[in-house]
View (cartoon, rainbow, N blue to C red):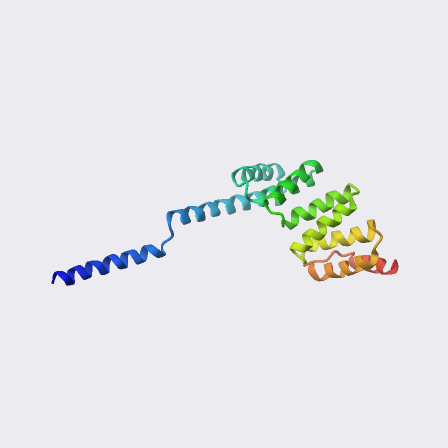
Length: 189
């Protein structure tokens, strides 16, 4: 009788412990909760940015950048805000910070390419665009920016036509003047 009760007790303990093995540990729960807070805060900041409240978006992204220095997204968005406001130096600093955290951040690479192109640093712009496309070969903004660079700034319409056509396939809504750009580039070949 004692051995049956002991076996029953052992079985109860084993069943109870097996249930514990599948439950998340307190650390996992904390990580999941922190991830949920990060995602909600990031979403609110993006929403403020999309609504044109750049001051609110900047404040939220700056807080996120302080709280999560290992995340490139807030830094890249701060770069986008600075770029939209015409503060190229600050934008460049934020994009470089994002790349320090994530060297394959395509938006940061693409924006740094635009900044370099606008500064007349065409080789550097090409390097950034190609780096973005090495990460994501279908990243439409970098495809189009590289096409513009090759076509307009570097006088290489043949390579630009290939990129324009590639952009046409990659973009969800290609630019309405794309056919004109392709036609014009082909005439200059």
